[in-house]
Image (tube, rainbow, N blue to C red; front, side):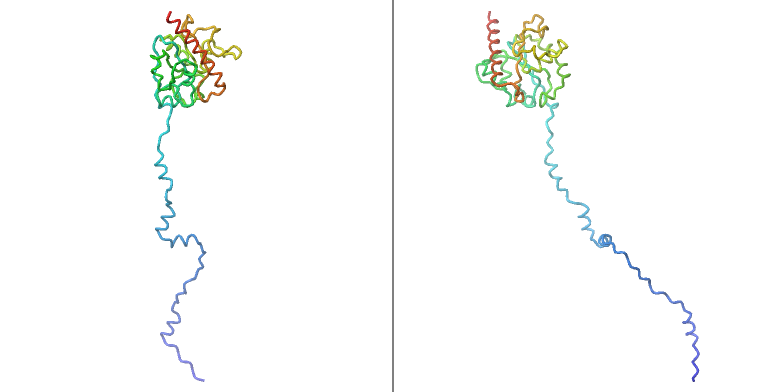
Length: 262
């Protein structure tokens, strides 16, 4: 049997040479969203993160400021000495303030009633309110001067506090007749003057005769007439009943005109 050849010197060195281990193979946990986000183009990411603001244009179109009653001017003071009758309303509505005339809303019956009752002898509209002083000796004023969308926006305390202001104004001009266009106005006057609530059984529409206080004039020479509100929102009384009260007022106005001629 032949002897094995002796290993060479290089062979011995290779036997003890350090061998680099093969790279370890790791199994990555599949995360779909992370992988997709890594390879997604930057332009695609921008489109997803910044959606197009669809409603931005609509907001720019409708920037009209809503009308606020506090921004509206007061109605002119349509009073002067020696008037036959002054009509007192609650306060100006939005349309009245916008137009600058009393009882300007299209649903208000004031201008129809004043003509149909015979208080004036020709059809009139709210555009005629300023000329009524010279033509018929009629004036106009309100319990509260600020405008609101409806009478319900007036506070009870606010209306009550305006009674002395209204009386002082009327005392300056001393009209022959004061017509309150709304029972609520008379209720606040009664409350201010007597400290009591107006009794239901003791109230009657029209000329106020049996009252235990004075208003405007101490000698009671100014006649006080209470009329239902002519607002289109006031539907508690029939049109026929309202017109009958207006005709009663027209009769009192005629008597006053005749008395002033004497």
